[in-house]
Length: 113
Length: 154
Image (cartoon, rainbow over all chains, first blue to last red; front, side):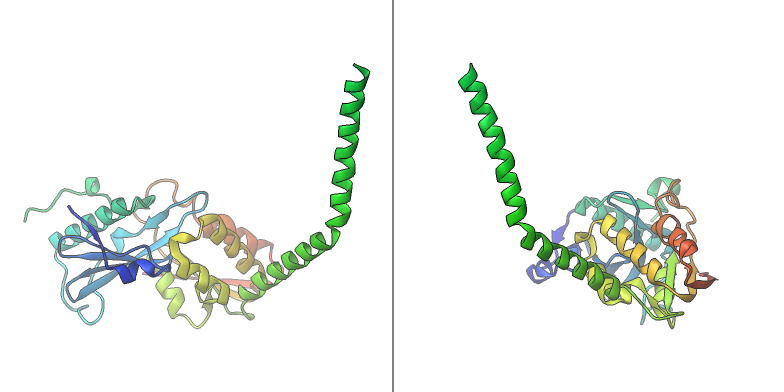
């Protein structure tokens, strides 16, 4: 998977970890408690929280259940959720962000596409 | 030999005199530094304080959104907390931990805790939780807190 930084303007914003664009998606952090994932005009947010003692965040990948407004009525398939989770993990690795997650690919079998 | 020792002694004495002079000469600066330090601490406490019954705490999945939507003021909506939150990963966790302690220490009256799930989280996450390890112990020692209301987040 390849990534590139999301625009030079984004890089000047100190409030966010630089947004990254992957293949058809974008991920950025918003403060300490949110991570925003985008695919086209669809977006969703994932909860995070800083961990005590050293660096790192807990990322609640298990909490991904639906798109954010105005697409909240569009159901996310099991395959989509799996893809979103793995895309976010890839972005976290790209950032070299120390994290712990309540979901890992090894915790469930990859869905057949 | 004598000269050498004397020289050393002289140097040693000069060192102490220099230190003393520096100390005396630095008193105004030290006082200014202390004033700035106290001022900074005061500003930090003011910037992380909320009114009675307004403190809102949270932990676990989805809990920060619930806290944000509540009628209270979670730490990331206080003047200082919002700046730290906006700085995101530029803020060391230890700084956020300290700010959380100050926020919990300033709480009064009825405080609300939005409790989300840690389901599926790796072992040890609760051990690393700022809420369980910093905020809650501080709240328990805070005599101004009269009640803690727990609100589960589905």
